[in-house]
Length: 462
Ligand code: FAD
Ligand code: NAI
Image 1 (tube, protein in one colour):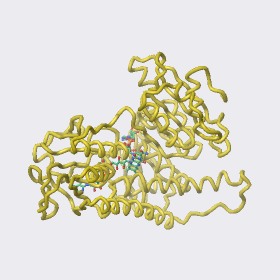
Image 2: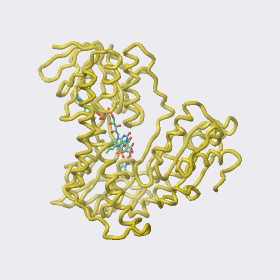
Image 3: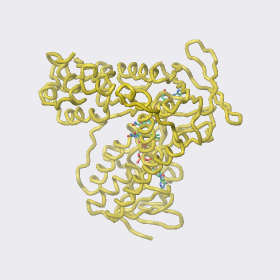
Image 4: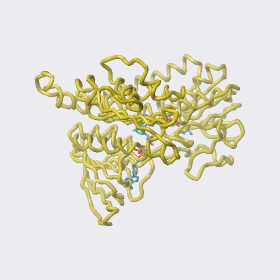
């Protein structure tokens, strides 16, 4: 039996960040993690491995499509899939090992195994019972099941299986045109698979800006991805190494099928609370299966907090991290805070998509008068030099106050560019504040400034 100020359950971006901040604030801290390695979904089977495969396959795409135009001649590289997976696993290892190092540095105990809340201030791991004044649940999420579809992680896979396929499929069907479907669909399309994405709704990436949705779909189609929109998947049958996906076209009610060697089910994720014992102790959940918390991440069980994918809000690593830092501060008696209005979302396709704040539709639905400043990357010299003239920056500002309400970018390094707007929004900046800030030339970020100028008297290079 050991006593801690804080025990964190789960070592994903929420849990490990919370633990490090707790330790930095002088609290004796332990983390319970059932996986073999630290870092949670994000580092092991999520953000990091998917970005490694996106990087490798984007490099291949560049070599195949853009090298000749730049005078870089020679045979385009061929794919050694086994080596690509080894590279991905090395990247994972470096990152998960990095968290282990940070735990040692901050004197955080790793309690290896699956943790269960077994009483007030008590967490049981295997046969060991540990006491803690505070417990933070950061148990994350898992892929949602889809009715009529049995996942075997070989032919019918979730993102976890799709990150470690034995071979590159010839034909892949992706169910769901959300973030996972488009990122991993892009990976396999670049590797030569015929990828068809079947989506229930009439637009891809639900909730995103409409211009972004249309633009991204068009660009991905140019890269070879096919889309079947407005179609509800009803089931997947497998035989040996093949699969047949059955779906109903919503408009006509026609039943159609698609053959594939691999089916990726990417229809969302749900909170993971299996074996946690939270409900057994009377812990309250939302009707969507998330752990219910108040504004300070406290659950209804005294001394028990929850953060990350297991509670409400976007299922994003940086949202979990921010909550991790904030809850540690609350426990240490400080004022932890997360601004949920300024959480960026990025899709790491090519080009990247990034978004923060309100979309034009949301701002109008909110009863606001808005102005929209839009600038195409065609007017950005740097983007054109790297074959990235497609796409745009769109800034939504309040018509009366000029205050920035949101931004939506599709284009080169969009996931980095968006942070200029995040900082601007944190400071309550106007579009003019961004427009009057000198931006280095030639950079992609000039497109952000031009979009801000377009909210006023006009962009220069449009
Ligand atoms: P998790 O990372 O899920 O970690 C929870 C941990 O808790 C797990 O390691 C689990 O083993 C452990 N655990 C659970 N229960 C127990 C228990 N009882 N005892 C002990 N341990 C337990 N987000 C982004 O922001 N950017 C991206 O690019 C991105 N890419 C993604 C790509 C994919 C393919 C996937 C699947 C997700 C991606 N995400 C991305 C989402 C991101 O991974 C999650 O939002 C993030 O990991 C949530 O962090 P968390 O700490 O809440 O939970
Ligand atoms: P998602 O919620 O982004 O998309 C799921 C899609 O599946 C939706 O478009 C939905 O309409 C569709 N769908 C649902 N049921 C269907 C059916 N029966 N037939 C056809 N389509 C159907 O979920 P996804 O892509 O699984 O990702 C899960 C979470 O992981 C996301 O919420 C995201 O936050 C996180 N993630 C984040 C990444 C990033 O930040 N770059 C990358 C990957 C994942």
